[in-house]
Image 1 (cartoon, helix red, strand yellow):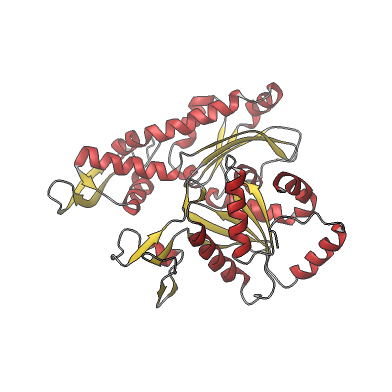
Image 2 (cartoon, helix red, strand yellow):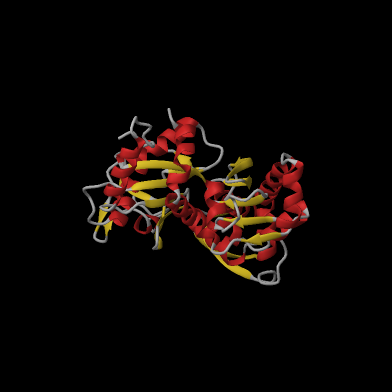
Length: 367
């Protein structure tokens, strides 16, 4: 099993065999994200949404076993920042790509088994989304991880394309559609037409960088050290990219460790100062959106004056993000319906139409 679509001498035989084997497996689309992994199945929608975190015994790659089961996903996320010296809670993907091959394989294997259920004899076909700017080596790492995790056949779909499909954009039409997918590790900006990407930019500035900006602000302003989960809560509760009435007057108690005394301490932060802390990464994403538009062909640009852009991914939930992009580009901006699941839903729809697009995938990924 090589993980890619087979370019054999009898493609019809391979196709028939695939359909027969498909009766004994659950084919799935996977949004393999830096922060969360989502799995979608045709006709059932999103069937799994768990953090991309694995807890292991320190110094080994052996997944920790807890009374609740293997320490993968939600169980492992609860351990982030709270593990003793003998345990490590690891996020095996950094900036949208695999940083720890073996841990990623263990995580994917767990998720695939969880969705595939008792159909263990036949592995599923899977479509996995990947950032637009990753290298061939990084693509191969994803494919190999999925193969070793139990996939029968693995296809890759670029995240902005999957996000556009999941958001319901007319991606196959002879007109421009624009998607801005702000995930945990990468932001992918693309202009699509006729079923493919015309212009794309992948930026390794995204949700994690928003959290890091808050952590850095707390250190510089209050000499208070906070963890990733606290920073994420601040972003969700009072974070914004532009002034919005919903949170402008809000404050929040933040607890952490005093960097001078080393003792636990709490302080109060305002929504306005958090907005200022987030301005640098937000501006970097807005500049990437502008650069992508500057590369577009004139006819595509003309379409976008009316069609505008759609924002997907977890970053779409940051209050005021649409206002920032609209001010930067002058284009109408809308937030996709259920932006967190757009990519996963897109991969599932992509899988439904795999026979139509498989040849394109074979040509682009065949090694």
